[in-house]
Image (cartoon, rainbow, N blue to C red; front, side, top):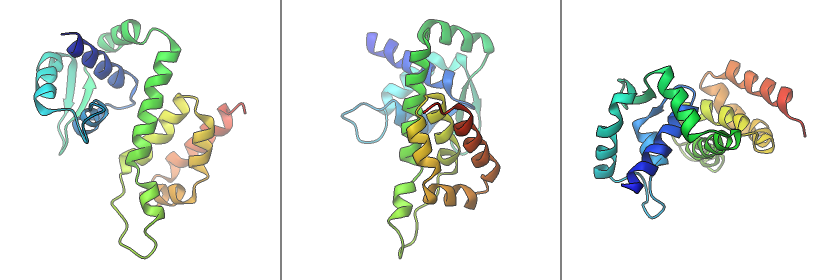
Amino acid sequence: MKKKKNLFLFHASLLAVCRDGLYETELTALMRREDDENTLPLALWVSLYSQIKVFLRIVVTKDNKLQLVHAETLQVVRQRYLPKNDDVIKVHSLLGAFFLSQSNVDAHRSTINEVPPLVNRRALSEVAHHLAAACRWGDLSGLLTDLIFVELRCKVGQVHELLRDYDRLLGNNNS
């Protein structure tokens, strides 16, 4: 039972700090066990999902996006599971690292004469937000000066969002 409670706490914390919900595949990948290669075991996810679905809004797409359904639910999760700013920063840091790993920036760097891998538009748009929210200014600075990252953001039409990320870095970087 304690394991399921910890999974709920982790799940609720992730959804409470993300901007616009998380896709089911993102959530299960984030919740995977250290000894598992890809995602949370299906049986564990189904059990957890059946218990928490009343707290979720499901945006039906190819890969369902999950969001906390009520502002009150969000408030309770933040008060109970994320009472300190450091707790929120840790979750943003985890999300930033996850979206960085999903962005395929390094894979694009090594494909000069090959077919480039698919671009994860969502990961490109989310990584800078979560690095900034986690106060990881050095990592954000490195990312925003990585020409491969900048090129990918421009290619997928995220120029305005990229400029917003530069403004966020310049306005909040105290180093």
